Image (cartoon, rainbow, N blue to C red; front, side):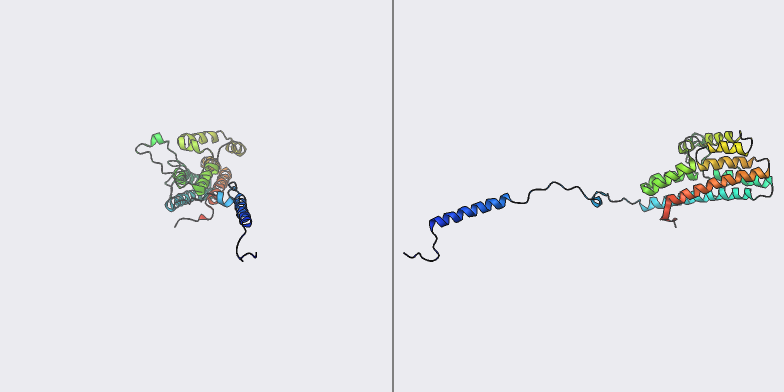
Length: 250
């Protein structure tokens, strides 16, 4: 008998159903395996940089500018001492530089803030608020945070102060210590050995300025002032490097 077209033999139908089931099972079994979590790429690992808030950044740059102005003024006064025509003139310029370097020290009123504090907190009375450029800039750097705040704080620590903790805890004692050290210098060579051991270029500049203010001769005053100005130049370069191309506040 000739089979009717389109009909299916029962055996063939069973085989087809079986193959379909096997293929289905195979496809399920061959599904893509679950891969372990891939390590994040370098870009993915990098956290989103947190920019320093603009007000904090501007406040920091303002205090840095005030600090820089004070360092430049102290340096310029030491240059005047270097160029003085007489011992008295050189010593007067050094006394004025002292007033810029340390508050309530030296002669005259500095045109800007003094660089270092000169009064220990317990002796201030009232609120005890500091007005020196070092303290105000350090506070602004800590408030700003980020790489800018960190870089500025590092420059204040070294090369400016050298021993930042001592200048914060007992600035009057720090000034007295430096003055006591330089009083032991009998000549330029001895002064160089003593000053070399002091921490920080700003502190060293203070020592040389004290020596200039008490110099017995013009030649000695010029030599002392020259060395003090050189240390302040180092500070200026370090502070400029700390703020980089951030620019000055308007």
